[in-house]
Length: 140
Image (tube, rainbow, N blue to C red):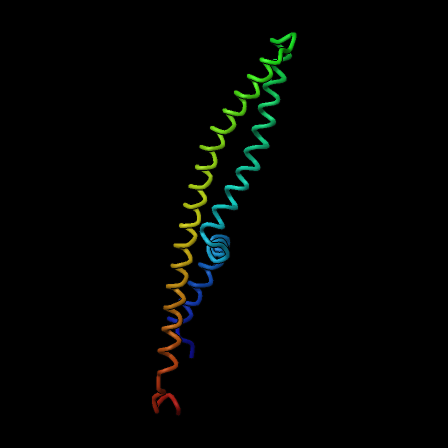
């Protein structure tokens, strides 16, 4: 005869694993620092690419509309201002990306702990069932 408590617990564990599969793989497959570093690196590449597109489009539009002749001082000043703006934007953007990655990792790790608790309950049910000695009435 099936143990109803065991079946319910097995179903609970299976449903939790299927519902939280992505987060569980994330927490189980990475260390916190590795996960954060991967997100910061991705944010750096994406941020640099987007900034370059927007910056060069803005510079092209400004020079096309307002500057008829280019002076070396204008070019240098524009490059310096763009570099300062890039560094400051990337600093704040990468801090935000890192914080979001840490928060997401902590949430995923908590879900992994919940799954571990549910699996411990299931193992306890199996242990109790294995230790159970059948009654004489059940043998007949």
